[in-house]
Length: 370
Ligand SMILES: C[S@@+](CC[C@H](N)C(=O)[O-])C[C@H]1O[C@@H](n2cnc3c(N)ncnc32)[C@H](O)[C@@H]1O
Image (cartoon, rainbow, N blue to C red; front, side, top):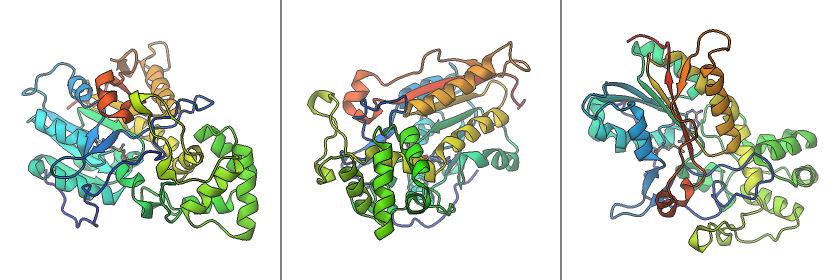
């Protein structure tokens, strides 16, 4: 396989740094429902070359990927459905010399970072701009059943920290939030066009925002005067509607000293809910899990990392249904992590954003023969 060449549209990954108070801030334990907000799967760490993405639970992923097969004997195709900056894939390709990779991501800007990073492995790598829900068609065109499918769902700091992408209340930018530019609907479309009840339901169910009704009402009133176009106007409206001060988001609390939970910016939950709706994250996760089941080789493994308790619940239920020998048809999955794998205290200390990460691994029974 050969790495695809395409121009890098100016996203180096080296200019980025995480800021406290981004929507994925891990200081989210106070979410009122099971809908805890997601955190980034990695943080950017400064090195002599600039910040580098640190993938979460990477050693655990490497350990569980091959079900005990050694570095020399693990042989076959890994599909990384959420390639991002290529952090996990870089580690795995380096560790397992006989592994090849199909890396996909819905964000073409991020793929340019991954292409550069994975260049040393170019003869074992194929990179495609695609969504998880498109995986089955992609694999059909390859004619090779993967031995592992990895998903590390959510957003990347390379998206969240770029004001022009419109994810962040920490800087002003267009109210966009699309990870995949093929999508037509932006966050502004939702905020300006959905009715008040639908907005309230979205903020409550997808963001866990207790003040969802107040926020929705304030948005509908404000947009009658001027439709929302920018992130700052929206985050100020949210803060005011919740009776919170409009303050510099950059001063908002991330984790407090000693890793204790701090306050989050008042717009955090609503921004999270909008991001999930714009990118249809719930639907994509369901479709990605089903695609993994459809394409995996017999004995192949699914490794799913999630950061949102709602998403972890979806993964858990999907695997439990497929592992049930009394369900319709024979069991399709053997769950290898009875409880989700979580970051060690040492990883949380070095990468606080790993705090909410949960990894579930299952082996495909009765998958495709390779
Ligand atoms: C948390 S980051 C992945 C980081 C990556 N594992 C690493 O180590 O660098 C999540 C990535 O998944 C991508 N993504 C999210 N949902 C997706 C979907 N449904 N299909 C394809 N890519 C998706 C995002 O664009 C983002 O780049």
